[in-house]
Image (cartoon, rainbow, N blue to C red; front, side):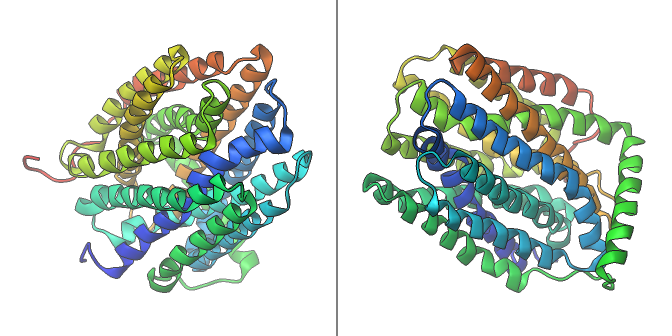
Length: 410
C-alpha cells in the first residue's frame, strides 16, 4: 500500500475542510459572538449556555457513536453516513446567519445540531485510517491529517478576518459552510466503500448495536485498552474545554478584541501544525505513549499558568506553547489507540474511541461554565481544568503499550 496515494490526500483534506468549523465556529469567532451578542450577559450566563450547547451535543454523539460505528461497518454505509453528518454540520452553520440578539435558545439548538454533525462525522472519518495506511505509517498519516487540519484553520481564519473587521458576521458563517463543503468533496469521491455486503437499515442497526455491545465488553476485558481510554477520557476533557473556551477567556478576562483573537488562534494553529509535523516521526520511532506523556506535562503547565496571567503578551506566549502540545497529543493519541485495534474492527473500535472522546467533552465545558457563573470569574474555572491533565498523565504512565511502530533510530 502506498502511503501517498489519493486516499491519503483526500483523507487529510477532510481535516482541512472541517477545521474551518473547529476554528471559526467552535473556537474563535462564534463563541465570543454568541456569548457577547446573542446572550449579551457578562456575569457568566453566556459561558453557562455555551458550555451546555457543547456538552449536550457531545453527549449525544458519545451515546450514538459506537452504535453508528458498528452500523457503518456492517451495512457498508460508512461513507454515506460521513456525508450525512457533514451535510448536517454545513447546513446548520449556514443557518447561524439568522441569529439575532436574544435568540439564546435558537442559537443553542443550532450549535448543538452543527456540533453533532461535525463531531459525529469524525467517527467514520477516523475509521478510514487503518485502511489507507499500513501500521508503520499510521502515526505519520495521523499527524499529517492534523497538520493539514491546522492549515485549514489558518486559511479559514484568514478568510474570516476581513469579514469580521467589517462586522459581516452572517457572511462569515456562510463562508465557513462553503469552505467545509468544498474541501470535503475529495473524501466522498476517493475514499473507498466498505468491503462488507450491505444489509437493510433495520437489520444493520440491530446487528450494529449488538456488535457495539460486544466491542465494549471485549475492550473492558483488555486492561491496557481500558486504562488508556480512562486516561484519554480525562486529558481529552481538558483539551476540549480549553479549545471551546479559550477565545471567550481571552476576550472576557484579558480584553482581546476580535482581530486579536483571530491572530492569537492563528499563532496556536501555526505552532500546532509545527508540533504535529515535528513529532510525526517520533510518534512512530519513540512510540506514541512517550509523546503523549510529554504533551500532557506541557498542558498541565499551560493550564496552571493560564490562571495566573494578567497581561496579553504573556498569554500570546502561553498560547504558542499550548499549540505545540495540541498538535502532538491529538496525533499521538489516535496512533496510540490504533495499535490496540484488531483487523476488521476499525469502525467499532473508533466508535468507542469517539464515545470516550465525546464523553470527555461533556463534563469539562459544564464544569467551566458552572464555576465561571458561580464565582463570576473565569480564572478559577481554568485552574480547575489542570486537574484533568495531571490525572490523565498519572494514568497514562500505567498503560502497557504505546511502543514504537517501527524499529531503528529516529
